[in-house]
Image (cartoon, rainbow, N blue to C red):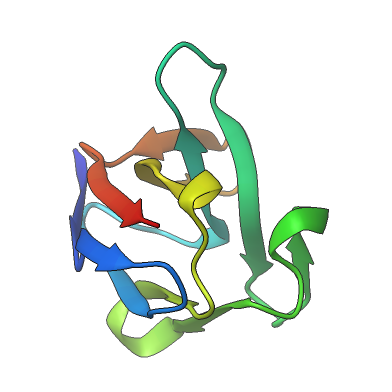
Length: 118
């Protein structure tokens, strides 16, 4: 069994910063991709940023130049540094990890609330 535990959410004023962390634990063979998704009220969950084991990254256009994803492979942990936050960044942020060799599968964290007030 694999668990993803997130931390670092909270409330901040527009222009502020937050750092999210997500640690994976359990029966982990290999973590292929780790990432962050978010879901605002009444909207679908969308990809915010991903990072592969080799370090290549991918970002939602609206967060480029403001958010930075990183990972510590030794700790099975992924981070999301969020700067210049905007009210439209308000959402529940979910950690995701794709784990395994053949037949890999996705695991999700429980979600952490990020609220940005203008």
